Length: 208
Image 1 (cartoon, rainbow, N blue to C red):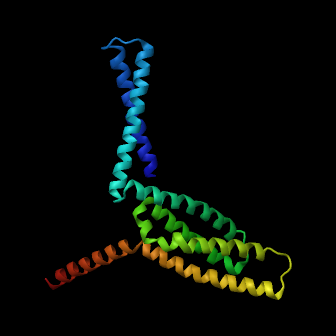
Image 2 (image 1 turned 60 degrees about the vertical axis):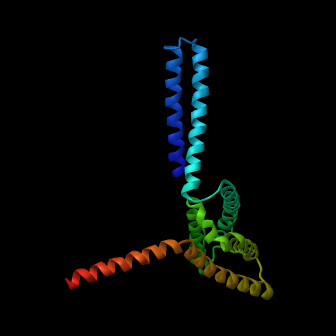
Image 3 (image 1 turned 90 degrees about the horizontal axis):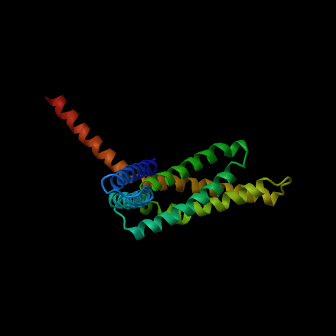
């Protein structure tokens, strides 16, 4: 959403600059139509990219990140986006009733962690275990489980492997819940603080 707003601001600034430069060039400066248009397009382009640079710099400052840090995080988010698409395909290809609810919940948690981190890149450092380990393991196991579960005939060995894989996926599901908790730790602490303040205020009011 913020990207759309930023693009709107950049486009509006560029459009207004283009029109203003053209009018100044064509009327007060008495430039030819083509030269006025060239100046206007050049000026508008410069304003667009200048505004974009300022908006990006404000975003980095707001998130307390350097350009190098943001590039690093952005690269990992791009990789994670592809992994999550693979995970979605694997999870929703498993149609057994016993796993549907857990798969939906796992995907919801994974998507929530990614969405929060994309919106506030600084939180990436609170979810390193998710991006470096848990997501990779979950994608790999889910794809293998989906492939094996789709086989027409299942031997006892295959059934045992599926059971063990599902058990491991369930354990990873618990890890994902902890990852989400870690990402939201700042908000939880803030909420607890505000609750304590509210309780103190209520107590003082009651005593009066």
